[in-house]
Length: 605
Image (cartoon, rainbow, N blue to C red; front, top):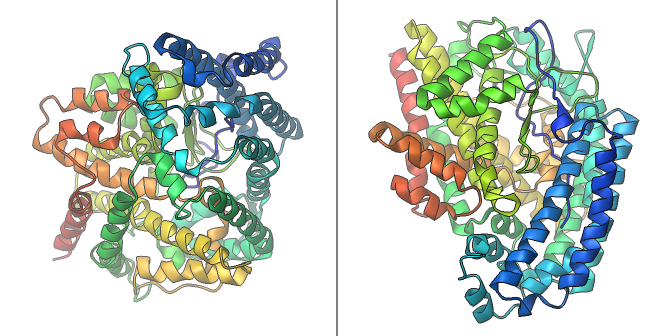
């Protein structure tokens, strides 16, 4: 049991400005202050209760009846809740200002202490997996514990990859100076990067935001600044990736994982062949999706070739206005309410009660996330709001996560968490609702074209780009297993997937080969990225089902979100007549993107 703070993701924007009154987090629902006696008391409680749990249950799990198992699980959940509360608080404070030494120290110290406190609990999963199958099935057939069976089924899927008790304890203890330390180095390095763009010193987020500026000269200057700084820091980023990939390879080898991706598939509760079908369907569709769309975009921009700084460029007719926070809020809440008033009601407190931190501040982590904290509190959303149309979609995305996390909380600590493949469902669905609401309100053909193009770009970024990222990671880990990788080696692997995924209309500037270096998913969550494509394909299929048969869809949708991690994706999708194990399933989702591109091409005719 290792508790980690929330981690930022890379696909959002950042910078505060004249966008109205942007909300800040009120973390007092977790703890009133960083030196609050309640925080110290919870740490003391954890130390005492972890030790007591180990004394009471180590060596005895196989003898527990259903009543004893129910008591054991309740105590384990209480420990998870307390540790999760502490790490959520110190982690969220850290991401508000990663340059504040006191916050850095508090998070590191809390992680270290909780890792030490929970080391005696390592026995739990190991011993649980040694319970006789017949006894396990008999105990979990009892109504007192039956609802927890999906959690323990997933735990027992790790049985073939389990190490000795002593080795598992060693890995648990070492985690704070292994991956966690390298993750922190990456976060602090990226947060401290500065970029000189046309004489102005900007953060990473502000610089990447310029890649979607109307002024092509600014976009090029931003891309060149990114390439320069990434190149200057490439040895640090290369060392981080080499070390983490090698550490993973060693642990995977000891655990007898057949592939580097196996651990992620197990944690996602998804079959490797389903992921492979998704990957293959998307790669086969590159010419019909990204290649075709970017050829259209080059025409709109009046260019024979696109440069990398043109990939996210707005269309010439696109309104460059900045969107005030109140308008962004109203847009998303209206779209949510149009689907079901309950959805807007769940989202409203995020705005009213300090559950969103939206502005850019010195030292604040880049990106956006929705962190569920613990089921006894509520989620928190982090944004870096810049007033761009994509920021509105990011708000819709993260609030979708938040709604999902609120609904799933009733499952309790052990069952609320959703596998990554399904964790993106509500977020992408929230984006789709917001987009459809805006599209329906388009007043002119040009406005509709701009909206459709923006949505296609978002979907390409979510599907095509993420599968290209997944292929890059697969190549990176395979190559690292053969030996140390130079920065040039990693650069070459990155470029090997870029032309294939983006298409022949692109030219790649010198320096673009280093752009792998700032993407935190590769560091924090290896092979996470396919979850985005999984979620987008799933939502496209869900939305098609909604349009085909809206009657009763909302109740089925809420039931799916409320299930949290208590069901496999096959069970969750069955009420909608969908099955992700069907190879044709992914083509349904991809056909929606194709349909949008068809409409854009027809407009040209």
